[in-house]
Image (spheres, rainbow, N blue to C red):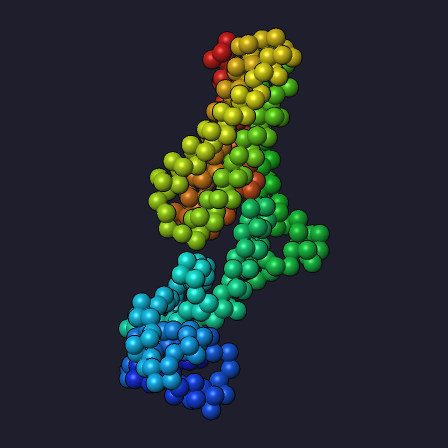
Amino acid sequence: MRPAAARARADETAAGVLARFAAEKAASVELICVVDEAGRLQGALPLARVFALAPAARLGTAMEREYPRVAPEDDQEHAASLALHHGVDSLPVVNGSGKLVGMMPAQALLQVLRTEHVEDLHRLAGIQRETARARHAIEDPPTRRARHRLPWLLAGLAGSALATAAMASFEATLRAKIAVAFFIPAIVYLADAIGTQSEAIAVRGLSLTRVRVGRLLSGELRTGMLIGATLGAIAFLPVFWVFGDARFAGAVASSIFAAGSIAAALGLLLPWLMARLRLDPAYGSGPLATVIQDILSIVVYFGVLRAFGV
């Protein structure tokens, strides 16, 4: 936030305001905030609009009374989202009594967007970092890089052990039909890919907007089901042609459909859960989501195989 803000009174004319700013040699004037005698914000208008007004036009009649504004305690990412939503370059900052206390200029809003984007990329990759250092990961020594990456990867290692245990419980199925093992990587990969796409949508959607999770979940679940059904249908014929087993081909296709649908829902629900816990939604992504999706995909695959009698 920049404490200084270009102020004007409602009864000032466009020519008078421009002349005053020129005399004061005001720098970087982007937005003119119209205030009353107590300094309370009445409205605002961009400097470019003032130039377009008639010289005798008063700012009180030309200002936007409902111009978007933020409070000093508001999250900076929310401020950037608000500016994008309303298509404005700068935002007035007002306190609880409506008094103008500063300005968030365009440069500050752009810096917020860049910083938040870099932090989210690190979290999506499962890299724990201090906020101030999040932009300098490539400059860190290998030991520091490893220290920031290992926590989530250790969680992934534990999850891999659970996935191995899940597969071991279906040892009889693997012994009876070795071809079952051929499709584990494909089903796990496809579920991960679908989940990653959902995570990317959910992370930004939950961070920058206030949409009901039910609406997001419904749309993303339907999308996952559509993608899973399409990929499953495409996979059915090649599997049947190679192995000559319609039940096995149907089980593989159904597993892709089920795993993809679950992954799409999970990719949304994990970031949402993080948001409910007042953590950045991006923490619910990356290696944490991957290992959970892998375990569920394996369980779903073998469960479908058993249901099909393979």
